Image 1 (tube, rainbow, N blue to C red):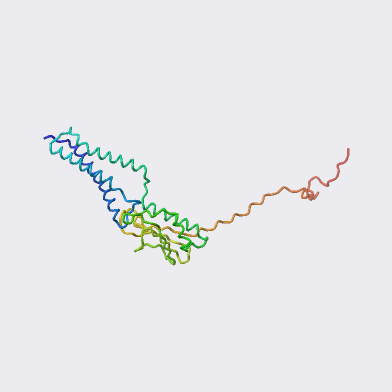
Image 2: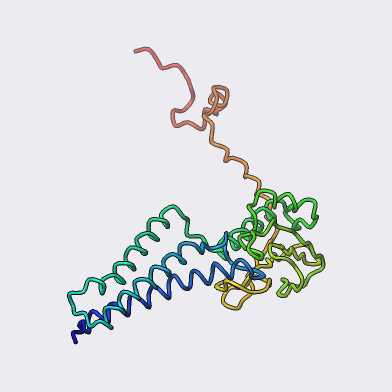
Length: 265
């Protein structure tokens, strides 16, 4: 009974594992994102395309197994189908990815915190930070919806919670919805800490919690913007002496002696 070479078998096995890992994972992410409490996606991942690729993989695998059972040798073209399917699927993914921006939910969340920090500092009076919700709330109107899904649907809008008399940033926020910005103001109103209810960076599914990066709570710190220093007075440039000042020079101050008419020869 003829058998394909070890190199051919290894190539088929590697292609099968790659297809199962890539598109099986995409299918699981797409299905889970539609039911998870919170998921770190801007929109639900597609499930049709990975399902099509996996269905084709099963069909091609059946052809390969048939060739092995029948004792087909190296010249059997069915042994080339799994690597070809992998390359074609990756090419289609590459073409589709050209029109998509590689943005992650945690990156957009950090940008929102920095945006609120800059805008709040611009509203300070130079001594204290703003603490009136009516002043801060309009800043959220310019933002797109939070970059997270709640049970498969994009989170509707940002919300703001202002807390006075804080000693530091909020690190735990049980019960708050995804997209809640917690603006915590110190007692002296010279500092405010801004936290965000989202998912920890790097996690794609879970329950809403305060955004953290590598285990550390990510906080934007708002401080008063000092007023611009008044410009100093321009330096006085020396002026040329006037004719009156020139005539006021005493004759003794010159080395020509008394100003008398020169004698006639």
